[in-house]
Length: 387
Ligand SMILES: NC(=O)C1=CN([C@@H]2O[C@H](COP(=O)(O)OP(=O)(O)OC[C@H]3O[C@@H](n4cnc5c(N)ncnc54)[C@H](OP(=O)(O)O)[C@@H]3O)[C@@H](O)[C@H]2O)C=CC1
Ligand SMILES: CC(=O)N[C@@H](CCC(=O)OP(=O)(O)O)C(=O)O
Image 1 (cartoon, protein in one colour):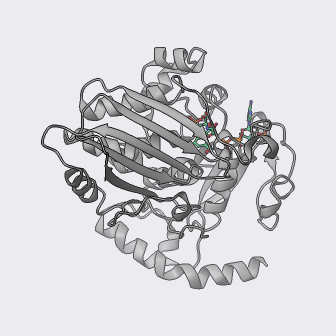
Image 2: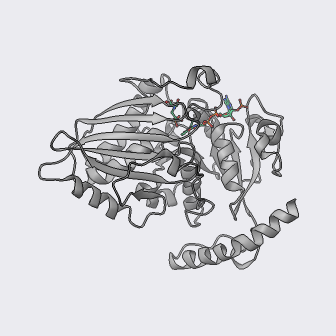
C-alpha cells in the first residue's frame, strides 16, 4: 500500500512541484525543499501536532497527508496518550504515523514546527515550555487577545504567558500575510471571527460601513465544540433542533471587536449571537450593517470583489446566490455575498466557511506554509466535498 501511495504521489504531484518552484522563484522566496528538484515529495520539514486526537488535529492529519514538504513526526494526546492514531480515528488506520504520546513525554528534537490543537487555558502553559526555536501555530484562543485584561475577563483566568503574547501575530492570513511570514508564534483566529472579519475588515478600512449597529447572527456545526464536548455532541440533544448560546456574551466578541477596531482605527462594537446547528461541520454568519452615507450595496460588493480578486480561498460570489456551507465543506474556502436589506441604508452580508478548515486547521496550515517560506496554498488546493 505504501508503494502504491508513493507511485500515485510521484505522478500526481510532480507538475505541482514544478509550478511551486516557479512561484517561489517569482516571489524571490527561499527554496526550502530539495523536493523541488526531485520527483518525490520528501516531507523534509518535520512537524508535530499537539492535540492530534481531537477534531482539528484529525483535520490537520488529513491535509498533511497530501502535503509535499511537511511530514508528521510527533503527535500528542491527553486521555488517549499511548494509543495509535488508527485506534482513535479508524478513518486514519492506514496512515503510517507515530503513536500518540503525552505532551510531557514528547520529544521535540526532530521537529521544526508544531500545530497546537489544545483547549484554551491549557495551551499557554504548554507553549511556554516548548523549545524557543520551534515555529508554532496555536489554534486555541490563548494568544489572540492583545489586552490581557480582556483575556482575564472573557476567559475567566489570568493569562500566564504575557511575554509570549507580545510576540504572537494574529493569523487571519489574507489580512496579515506579511506579518505572518516572519512570525514565530501565530494565533490562529477563531472560527466565528474568521467568517466575520474576512468581509468586514476591508469594508471598515475603506470607510464603507458605520462603526456601530453591526448585528451578527452566526450558525455553527457541532464539531465547533470539539470532540471532547461529549454531552453537547449527543445526537439526541443536537439533531432536529437549533439553539443559540453565549447570548450577549460570547468569548469571541473581544476578538472580533479588537480586529474590527484595528481596521477602522476607532472603537467598533458588535452584537453577536452564535447558534448551534444540527450538522457536523460548517459555519455561516449573517452580518447586518449600516452603510456609510452615499454608499450602495453595489459599492460594498465591488470593493470586496476587488479586495479578494487574487485570493484563492476567499471568493465573493459573482451572482446573487446565497453562500451555502455545502459549497465550502472540507475545503479552505470562504464564500461571501452581499444583499440589500429592506431597511434603507442597510446591507446584509453572508459568509460561510468549514469551521474545521478555514476556521481552524486549513488556515493553520496556510499560516505555517507562509512561516516556512513555501507557497501558502501548498496541500490546501483540494475541492470541497459535495454533496
Ligand atoms: N473545532 C473547531 O471547529 C475549532 C476549534 N478551535 C480550537 O482549537 C483547539 C482544538 O480544538 P478541537 O480539536 O476541536 O478540540 P478537541 O476537544 O476535539 O481536541 C482537544 C485535544 O486536546 C487534547 N487535550 C485536552 N486536554 C488536554 C490537556 N490538559 N493537556 C494536553 N492535551 C489535552 C485532547 O486529548 P485527548 O483526546 O486524548 O483527551 C485532544 O487531542 C481548541 O482550543 C479549540 O477551541 C479553533 C477553531 C475551530
Ligand atoms: C460550537 C461551539 O461550541 N463553538 C465554540 C467556538 C469554536 C472554537 O473553537 O473557537 P475557539 O477557537 O475560540 O476555541 C464555542 O462557541 O466556544
